[in-house]
Image (cartoon, rainbow, N blue to C red; front, side, top):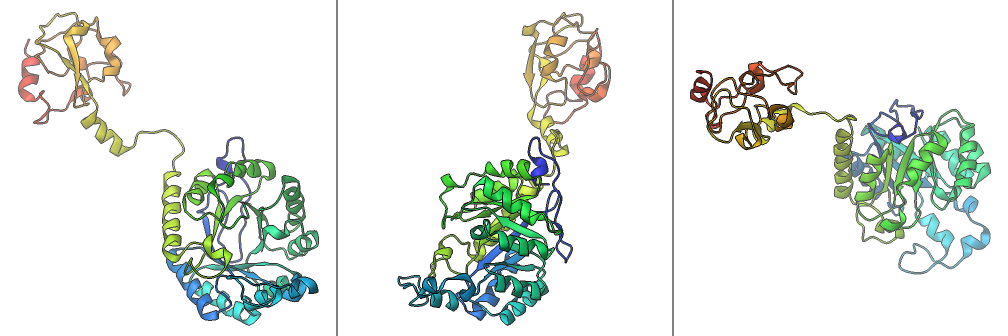
Length: 397
């Protein structure tokens, strides 16, 4: 359906399977993640509503972010002045603390998400936060782009044995190489997300073709974490093979905070899910074929060889003797070269369809049968110009 197996030269990557049994990878429906992050603004009522809205939109998972300020920031960093319209505190530490939810609140949100049929997981930005998620028995872990180079953290995550989603924003391929190697030491499996960590990200900087390189380089499922304002690149990522798409989610894009600007509101998320499912259906057939409906349309819209004027039996057909008109249930004009120079065995009136049985020498028709089979030209509808009266005249000679 989608995933790196579709990329030229690629091979089927191993799926990851969270504890609830939902497989993520080649051949599986795209796993759509509503990234709540800290867009709940530290308010539990808002967080609950966001989980419900994500479920209503059709998301497969909700993802949060967990931080422990004292473990995340140096003393100087926590005390740094942090003003401006997006600030929730006078220092950066106060700002970060204001946006945090407790472990107990995370447990409640996890229960709510799972009751609505979604997977709950989060990115842990420090060791105490990782311990919180492990205690909650989350099904997935997320490595944020900021921690791609955090080797001790990567090793702690791998040691938990859970499936891991690795975001690759702000990273060189060499840095991603190291991260993938560290995480692959665990037994849960890895999904690599192509990502640009600009909020919001200009479309010209997204670089979707990098997904192909990631898939071929690592042989792992590849997804997309998008920070663009619109939907197009995220939908295109699915067509390109993304087995997981993550988008930031908000109830109101005009709220305070930089993440809101790159987030989808509930109706936008619902539209994204709908478009992704449409793309998946469109990717289900991988070979060129003529569908039954197209066959019906071909009879109506394509054309057949017909007489350009009244022709007598014995006429050796020349280009001026024939023309091409609808409907397309007679001899196809692709047989033009095989018919010119052949001779008629019956009279054929003007606009009468040329049928295989009317030719002295058999021609190979499109269904593999040689001339003489009435199935090659059996249409006698009222609008054809070659109804029963014409047929009787053509066969009377």
